Length: 194
Image (tube, rainbow, N blue to C red; front, side, top):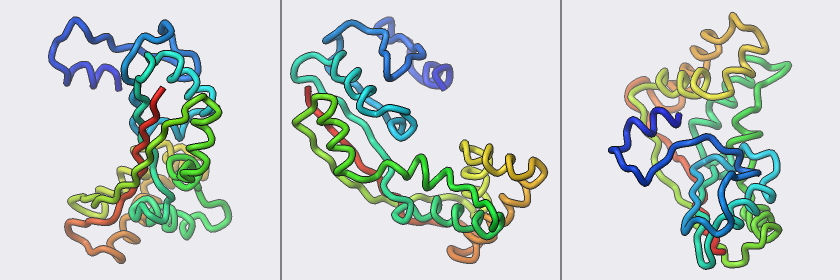
């Protein structure tokens, strides 16, 4: 992902692309005016620890800007795929989407985690948009084969990935049609000041 990002960025000697642990940032105290994290906080094993690190590297008055997906029911395609897979694997449905990307949606919890890290000036805006795709199959492939959900599907049978993807595509087509599809997608945008 870093190589892809670096390739899309025009050459600038002020930019350095590197891998870092969000819970142990390799930067000096008060080094930055802004720390950003787009749809990554849901994956942190210890969010308050990572938030403390973000605050540590911010200058006084600096901003920590991040986003987190809202609950799965407000993200229609993710919910559709989760429901489709529950029908496909009725004895052991894959719950990655509900558990992880959409499992950190409670704004009170987000505020509490930020307070534990020392942030007191927090603004949370919930934004709804439309997710669009050229076909139901496109959505099914994106979720079933292009996210860590794939690992949960393959754990239930490596030979079942394609059939699970087809089942999800059919589910989406039944709900949204077989051509271009669109559905609600919703996330929180959080701004915390040091």
